[in-house]
Length: 126
Image (cartoon, rainbow, N blue to C red; front, side, top):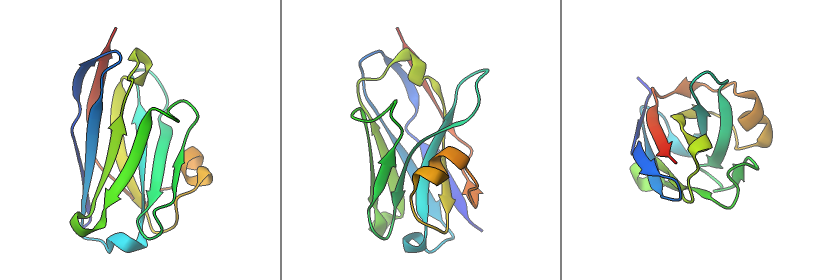
């Protein structure tokens, strides 16, 4: 059974930082790209970033570029999302997802993932 488990969410003040983790099990990690999505209250889910476990290639949406950094530890089947300079508009439930494909802008903007985690809540206070 494939499982994606997010952790690291919490309450932080604007300008602060958090590091989210996505621990994957039940899949061949190198064959998958891991994506982060988020959904704020009353908003549509949106893509944030992705990383190819095999090549290390990454992609970020413009709203987080320069503030968020995605990385992976293949030995631990874990992907991290380091979030700096957080803004109130970053408040959302953050989900990680996996697709047996590469990391791409198309994937970030069109979803179509094979597996999803249950999410972790990030709240940024002003």
